[in-house]
Length: 372
Image 1 (cartoon, one colour):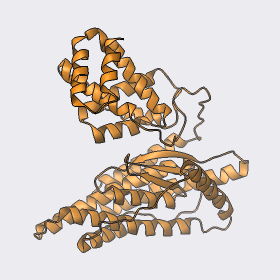
Image 2 (cartoon, rainbow, N blue to C red; image 1 turned 135 degrees about the vertical axis):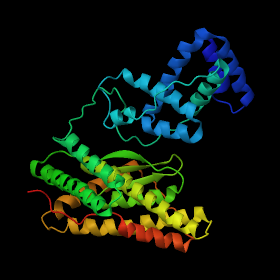
Image 3 (cartoon, rainbow, N blue to C red; image 1 turned 30 degrees about the vertical axis):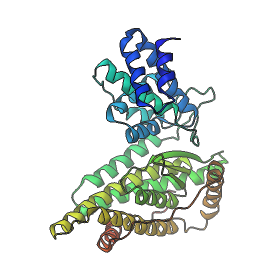
Image 4 (cartoon, rainbow, N blue to C red; image 1 turned 180 degrees about the vertical axis):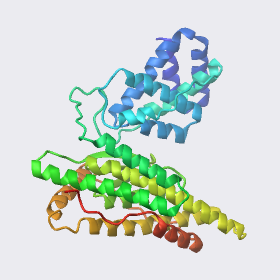
């Protein structure tokens, strides 16, 4: 049995810190074991893909449960493991890999070995979760992007980034309205084109991080955005993400709009909180929780109303209704057992009132007709 095998057998499947220290000492004393230890880490990452995890999911859970140097370690493992697939990567993986935090962590050999074993112990204990795509390297993996899609998404991202950065409400409103117009037109045009050409479109899924703090309010906001865009969102509070089910033309729009509205809401909350604290108030946590809950609730109403007006045209209703049914069926197959959670924590009237006002002021455009 090699040094690595002895160390892993003694450290990965027990919670005893003394066993972890003993295993780390074995690895620190044997420099010849470094290459094998690295290969075993790539194997654990590959197993995570097979259990339904994706790069962003793994990094998110490592960041939540361990430390930043563990994040750098797992990012290095992911980058090295995925290099062997070349271009045979599932959709969205390239963007996730581009966001990996590169960089070396310098430490003595014992500290380094301890951190590696802590990371590997987390990786081997990851359970299987609902897959949202193929694993990398699959022989049948073949993705054909929609014509003009990269350019469309680039324009939308640029518009929303400007809307979030500007200090002029009128400019932000115009930029966000233009971005939403592009998203709405693209989504409806894709649905109509698929129906006219009998294209075999099918719903897909993606995961969007829902990070602490105030994750309940953020999950509600994401659910509102998803519902307004004919998608379904299922929140996994234990792992800090929601799985959004919908057609590809809608999934990207959900992520972009949710992120933008969350940025706007956080900025509005910070301004409102500063005013409250200037008046002598100190209950920051309850204010923020109530603010974001109200913000999410009110935006859900606004988004639902906007969707109703967009889909009012009678000739669009059959096309969109069939896609709604397909999304619901796909989500039910992925998540045959879901539970509802009672929402708690709205105890601050001032926070609720400010959050509602911020939602009413959030930059949401009027409905636009589809392209002709």
